[in-house]
Length: 403
Ligand code: C5P
Image (cartoon, rainbow, N blue to C red):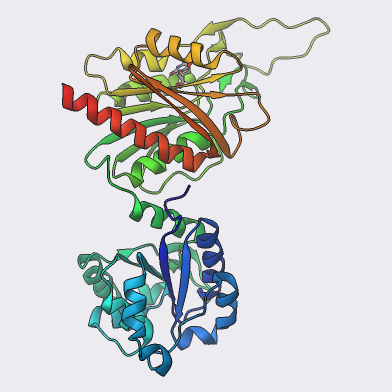
């Protein structure tokens, strides 16, 4: 289940070229389980036909403030009361100026003015228009009034110029809305997450690694941010974009990861070790490329140091959560690790199965802690991350309250 499931969202579309991206945004919101009603300004209808949004949202599109049928029942107030959140995407410079001024001449403006629920804007405009002091002042005042400003992003613009002013991508906007709807159970907490694989060099061109994609760790970092935490992400080499709000430390080897995590752990309230750290590293890294011969090659591997146990053994240790990837006897192995590594919680998952585990988009976890356990059935890693962060915050708070 996504945080957007059954949420009633008014999607306001104003007259900018990024209006075409609002079509995809509508689909993604619907896919996440939200109920979407689209309100378009007159200018927006010059870019995209209302029928497109009607088909995508499954609801009639609202256009006119002076629609006599709707307004006989105070349509703009009814719409504002129906919604759990209003997102205006794209929000033009003109719309931002109108919202700041409290204008109510268009249906969307009137709905925003009457709103008692969170209002979010995804600004989209030419970079010079965005940086114009008038727009900057409007943005600052709207932010002061607790309007959520999502973006804009930097990049190539429809006008051919490049810079800040691009509308955030629909997927990122959905994530930002999820964050708005998330209870801030980790407000004031700092969370350190390790993620991804490590690479252990054999020679200048070869290394030993594993199938970890980093998806679980990155999803946990995002879920912790959404729950209000300050997050530091120590990441092995992965092909993922880290959450914008995270402090990211990039590492390559198990030894690099050990040093970074141990250096940071005591300064954090919670450590979540999702990284698939190499258990062995070549005893020696050859200076030149290893040449092939006819006979078999033997490589001596040394044990790496266990980061998780070292964190759990620190004098001022954070609440420590480990992961266990198992191919069999999952619960017994996980319980044994919880105890032997001195952890506060362990999340175990099956690997080598058709679903879930390494390099997949879904996962299922069996989570256990001293005195409790919970099974989180197969779901997207984002969803599993939300549930695991909930369990972590409950147990972390319980532990804090008893000490
Ligand atoms: O003992 P095992 O490697 O199965 O335990 C997995 C857990 O231990 C994961 O949370 C992983 O991040 C952590 N780990 C570690 N340092 C290692 C090996 C594993 O922190 N060298």
